[in-house]
Length: 418
Image: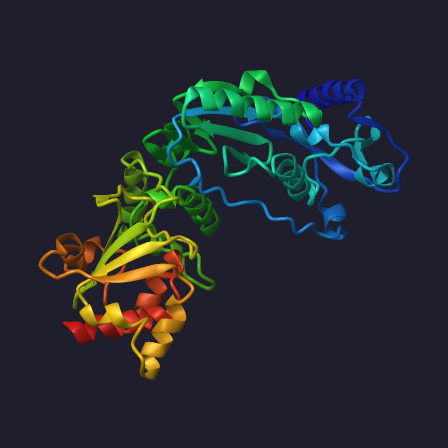
């Protein structure tokens, strides 16, 4: 370590000793210590390279949730709570403490609390937080590691929700950092997004890292850029198409040549992030209406609720199987597929694929199906396009996770109907 880092090391070791987070050790274990930059507050955080320990640790498979923030539909009041040094609030079993030992210029130390860098730390912390708020999750609470979001439909309701959350934290002796908490907000930043009554939007302060990104010069830099930009892919229509020239450079044995198409896609992604729409949250307690149409140029569909066209929920997203929806199509015979006494093998395959979805099919004359019909005939604005091979369709639909077999059938329908 450099002289200034050694000075900082001595300060942080003493702070952690005073707080009871670490103690001197005589353990046979010992991983190297290092500093990482704090992105938000500046300064350095003392970390330990636990790769040798992690390599022989039985992994905790508790899932880290993918936060889609769909449950906040209808919320108008928000608060967020950030725990103070969340990991350090979890004590380690006495018999496991020696395994956390780390070596420094000033001796060997071991953690008495859960440290950053331990492979099972995120999973265990997520398990603990879910256990604490199990009764409130997705009702008025969203939890991601040590970040807690509370949302309500009105201020009176929010007061009660806050009381419940703060009581839970007190009961389990979990402490928040007041300077990083915010209460009674109409709009709140959470996990890189801005949440409000209108829906979910990109957080401009987080997108600036993407906008300031210089042209990638290596495969690693391309992956880093696409990984960061990809966090907001739900806001960008045709993200995978735009990124395809860059993605192709990351393939094994691909020659790295940054051409005009790569530069165009690179600039286009940054541009689209600055004009990303607000994604409206659907009301999952009400049925969905899907108006769909197919043509020789493509497939088009419109998602609606209560007769109103929804703003985009997420480009290339899916609706879960448990949600009830009405499907409106100008393919009249499809209306009878659930009651038809005799089905051929193709129709049986269709039925097998859609039987898990709670839906009802309605006939909607083509002349009245204006929006979906227009979308199906404008190939460049579709999520997919009908191409000579179903394989191409399947590749383009990977992002929205539609079953491959169902895509082949959709492709056949499009050609047979037009």
